[in-house]
Image 1 (cartoon, rainbow, N blue to C red):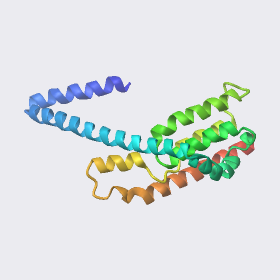
Image 2: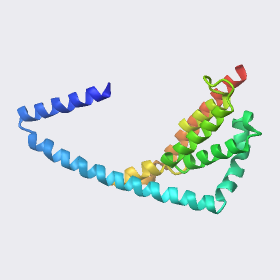
Image 3: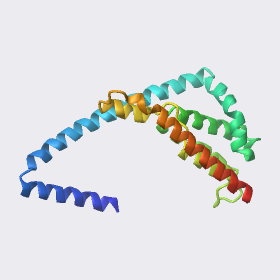
Image 4: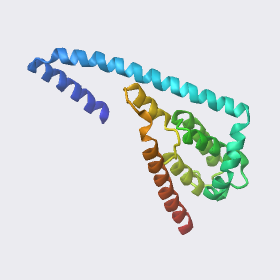
Length: 191
């Protein structure tokens, strides 16, 4: 649907610019937006490389295992069905750590791997398990201590204080996660 709407908007805008004498403004905005796109992309790529590299170093230094051990009581509470599956719990904790650090792009493949492992143990392949539902929720409403992507975008667009959003992000992600966890836990008990 959007692949039809956007070209229509672009064509209508160009036709309007031609008839209103603003074709030069469209030309200028095209080049400015291209420049901004390259700048934001480079900033995000650099930030992603930095945090992915730090995650790799942390995993080689066994810091990830220490963080996983810290998250273990939380994971046992959120995923009571998985108490015996250490592999899946480690995959979930890696995903949660990446999300807490705001590494959404690094967290995605980790989340897919954890979901794939849970699906292998799922008896009803066409139905989500309670653990799978909780995992989807945890990923959707992930608590982020360092929202790196948002900070990088704000910085690249010239924000004078790109970190001023940290407290609102913490409040929003914690409230969303808690509300979701409560609802999913209530739905789990009703089954």
